[in-house]
Length: 216
Image (cartoon, rainbow, N blue to C red; front, side, top):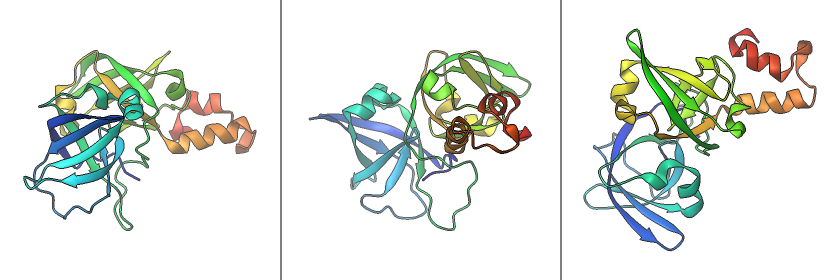
């Protein structure tokens, strides 16, 4: 389990072809606590298992073909940058929202525009993701915990503050980029319960989605 608060950026040092997938080598700055063999680390929001560590400090991950197909990890190239977050430990602060690291689908950046001192980013969302979005609710984009500022016809918009641009790989974001999307698991549960008619006060999923999480 993760929070969507990016802890470090990694740089792709090498990608090796392997039967059934690829082996990914990431260079990182020193981390405050040592790594454990087999621990889970979110790479661009994708939960991967640490397969090995090189003497240079590089982290090594095996990435399956299905993961390469479903996420933007298949488009990584040497020198590229990725967002990294280590799994939650009991007692850790939950600074963003609950993120499983199981990407639902990829979206595409449609536009990036200025919004005061921030940036407004519009991202297309496939139906499997869009149906679980709520205005003012949460979504993980490339592992970053963000708020759905606007829910549009077949897309959504988020606003990025300077800290996000500096601390994640979204400082180099461009229109057309593929984005890993994971809808908020709480919204998924609410939608399921709405379909069963189990929401209190006569709330429907459509009303919850339209009026936003802050009004429920």
